[in-house]
Image (tube, rainbow, N blue to C red; front, side, top):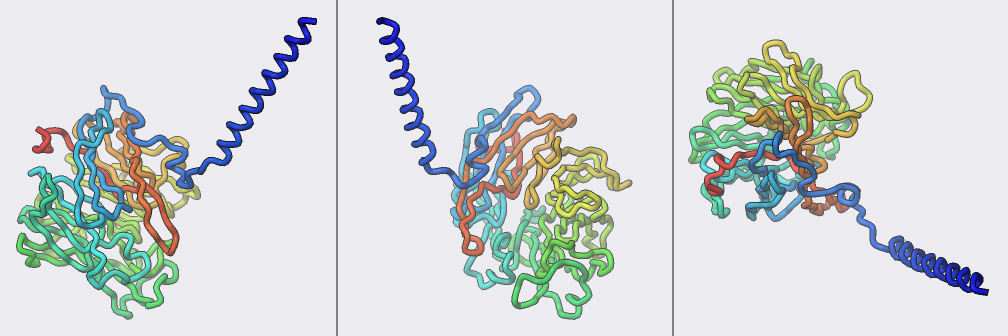
Amino acid sequence: MKRPKKLMKTVVGILCISMLMGIWLNLGANAEIDQQTHRRVSRTGLVAIDKEKAAMGYVLFTPMNNTCGKVFLVDTSNGEVVHTWDLPYAPGVYGYLLPNGNLFYNGQVEDDGAWDLWPNWNSFKGGIMLEVDWDGNIIWELHSRYHHHDGRRTSSGGAIFLAVEKLSDEIKDQVQGGIESSSEKGEMWADVIIEVDADGNQLWKWHAKDHLDFDTDVIQSNCPRDEWTHANAVVPLEDDNQVMVSFRNISKVAIIDKDTGKFVWKLGSSVFAQQHDPTLLDNGHILVFDNGQMRKKEPVPYSRVIEIDRDTNEIVWRYKDVPSINFFSPTISGAQRLSNGNTLITEGCFGRIFQVTSDKEIVWEYVSPYFYTKVKDDVEVIDNSIFKARFYTAEEIPNLR
């Protein structure tokens, strides 16, 4: 008679466990599920580190969708935030540190009368450039209603920056490619590069419309005809006689001679696919984040970082993931070559920042935990996107010494 009692206790025990499991599963099923896919399925903060191979220092970034002007400086050794700036303007679209330790910041101004040029304009519009100290005090500022994407401090104490201008119907009709304009106005805009001195006086101005080629500088087939060029980076070169610019809509990176306004080097869609963030390396090569939209002869999009020899236009180094689709940021993003030979990469659409060695081994990885909500086309968009991040050693940040 003892066995049936033991059997009964076992059965009751199993039933109790089953009931508890059912309650637990039911509670799990009814729990609120995070609808932001990458926040739900990904780890955030410091994800991976190899302290022997990774460059140690600090990474600066600003989440694009934050409207409160947050800029974060993160210690690469532990992923902890060591400093934050709270600025009076939303990012338009990033900032970087100057040699004196101050922050140069491209901000976004909403009320200057130039907000609605075309539907996508407000996603990358700027309007103000600031130099701020460690405590966020404004040292220098420049307002420009058509400024967008990028502005850099110059050796004169002024700045060089991107702006736009409306094209005449005569020029617009000659520009080839693209899809129907998304604006009811039917206007087309193109880029202007402007340089000013410390007092805001104009020193130099360059108009893309005067130097591009209608037959070869063609808008790619996934871009609306609201804008011909869509520049996303302007880089003053060290000799101050040249400037490098990246045009996303026509997949071109070019170097301009400031005296003549002519291109001294230009490379297009035979290599690039709606690229971002070109930088000139110490060896004279150019490092570029090649986003991968509409890449020729390849049906599956993916991103890569490439180093190009300007003399031959050959790719001499590249990073892409395996399988390649694992690494794909269709817009924004950047790359920076570090002093130890590593490359810092920003997979911007997903807030992912990581280092790879020259042998393409990932040795440090961080995913931004800062998700912000922004309304676009009456839809709430929640993301942790970063236009691009920048790495600094401790010696490059005076206030941390």
